[in-house]
Length: 443
Image (cartoon, rainbow, N blue to C red; front, side, top):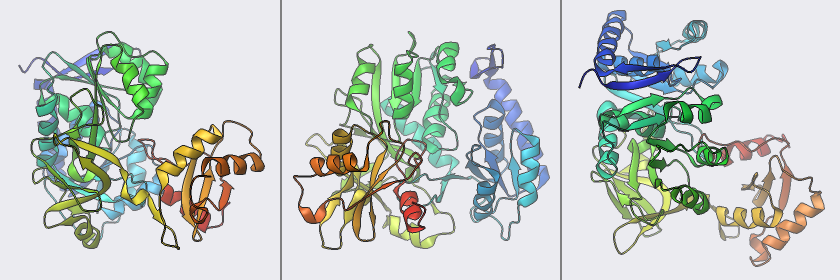
């Protein structure tokens, strides 16, 4: 069906325009020829989510380049070292001046480590710095196949892509999922237009992170045509999921990692947190409760130029996710959180941080708080609080929340950062950044 719409875009005045499958292919083929003739080896693409960006990604892979997708919202000073770390020798940006500035800073010292068909994404982990994960066009398409096997779309569906293409969840579940099923993918215009794009494109399906879903529900943006919402990248409150389901919309919670090209499991039944493992993946649970994944078609090649971290994560072909979970009697996966969220205190006591944080949030009536280990003691870091609590009130709330816990494992220090807590795109707190700030004496 070459004349049907592969992509749908909205211009500055709200007019919709379709890019047919035929046009998409012709543009990709033409651009891949230009890239091959240019002789570059690794292209960094500032993935702004536009149709031009989608064409550039497909064309660069087709031309045999190593491709790195990066977040266009990251400032140039922070982008430059990221691009250097993956040996980028050319840049694509929708802004010609920005592209020129970044290319002027490129100084590749070695040819790409992987080359043709490698597609790199940077993780946005909560416990460590970003790492470049090496995926391939094959692993990404296998992941799209995995997801569509459990939740197929049809050529009559419109999948709205609101998530950044620089994150693997957005790329696979916001773009490839729809294209692999022959559906039309509507390309959103960015954060300022979330609600407007829901109205303009009138999608039947959308992939979101929990904070985005909360926003769409709050502003009444879920349209009448919407029949399927896929929620991923972070845990989501049952109340929010139930509110969407109450509107007659199918809601599925997904679990996946950048290292597995996105999806590992999806909830397809009545229980949001009981997830069916994707057909090409196999999940087992270690003795200490860690989720282990065998995903030969979707697994990363490794972390870019980091053999030690790769060997630590993948052992005998099995990915050690660092996540805690269990399989129920029906073989459905339940994810309980990060094992790295377990802090071992100097006295040997182990503390499950999310449990502490939930208790303090309820007692304090605040959301922007996090617990980290600093100087051997548990520390409560307060970001931007909604209410003007005195230090004494915060201390009393913390003591009240944790009175049932042993004295040796209670919070020993409270700090006010003076700014919102650093978070990933999915909304998870980046504890390593807080710990760095505390260690540098900035608060």
